[in-house]
Image (cartoon, rainbow, N blue to C red; front, side, top):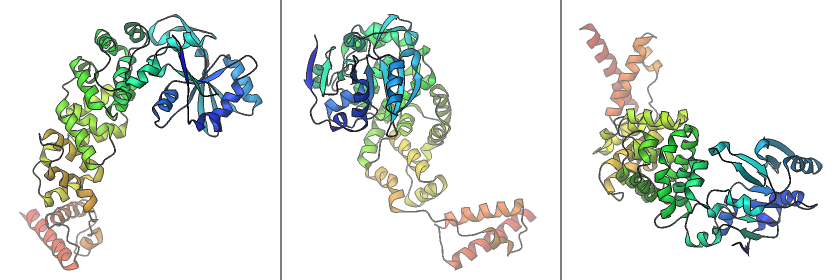
Length: 418
C-alpha cells in the first residue's frame, strides 16, 4: 500500500540547485523526484549529502533540457539511464525510471519505464526506496515511512532475491543498520545474508573496501560487526582472525578522547595483530597506499608501547610522528584489556596535545667543525647524536648540545679504532 506525507522544513528542496534541476525536468508530460538517501536523511533530520533524482524522462530528453537551460550534462551511465548534471558546482545523478527484465546480479537487464512503484520495488531497502516531489510530498510504496519511525532496516520484497541481484547488499545491510537502525538487525534480512554469504567472493575488493570503511565509522559499528561475526561474514572478507573486543575498546577509546572516528584505526583494532595481518587486509580490501602504510605502522610492534613512562612515550612520539604514534598507541590500548576509561592510557594518548616534540637542533655543520668529513660517516654520527639527544630528554641548551656532539664524536672515533 502506498502512503504519502509532506516533508516539512526542506528549503534545499524548494530553492537552490535542487529546485532548479527539478524545475527543468518537470512539466511537458514528465515528472522528476528526489530519491534514495537524501529522502531518508531529510526524514531523519540529519545532513543531506548527494541528491539523486529519478525521472520519467529518457536520458536524451534529460540532456536536451539541460542544454536548453545552459547546464552541463555528462552521460555517466547512459546505458542504465543515468546522466549527471552539474549545477552550481554540485553533481546531480539523474536516472530514468527502470524495471528489471532479466536479473544477473549487477548486470541485470533493465527497461526504462514510467512506473514509480516498479522503480521503488527494485531498490535495496525500504528506507532507501522513498521519493519526494518538488512540492515536498514524500511517496512511499514500500513501507519506508514506518521503518524510518521504527529505525528498522528491511530489504524491499524478498531478501534472498535482493541479495542475489547484488551481493554487496549483504555489507550494505549491516552498514545501513549501523548508521540508521536500532536494536537487532531485521531477522529475515539477517538470515538471508547468512544464506547468501558465499556470494561475497564475487565482489571486487574496491566495492568491499568502500562499504567496510563506511561501516567502520558508523554509529552502531560495534553491534553491526558483532552481528556479522556471529553470522560468519567476517572471515570471507578479511581472510583471517578478527578481534571484536579490541574493536569495541578502540571505538570507546576514541569517544572518550573526543576523537573523530577513524576507519583505518578501527580496522586495525578489528583485524591486525602483526604486520602480516596488515598486509593481508590491505591486499584483500585493496586499500590506498596511505591507508596500507597507516595499517602497517599500527601493526609494527605495537606491544612495545604498553607500560611506557613519560620519557619513553616522548621518544616514541618523536620517532613516529603524531598520527602514527596515536594510531599505534591506541592499538596497544585496545589490545591491552584495559577499559577505555583507563587514566594511564588516556594520558599517553593525550601526549601530542600537551607536548610538542622539538626538532633535533644539531646539524651536519656542527660535526664538520669537529673534523668529520662529509659522507656516510657524517650521517652515522648524526644518527648517534640524535639517539643521545633523545636519551638526554631533548635538551636545547648550548652547553648540553656541545657536550652531546663532543661525546658522540669521541665515542665514534674510539669505537672505530678498536
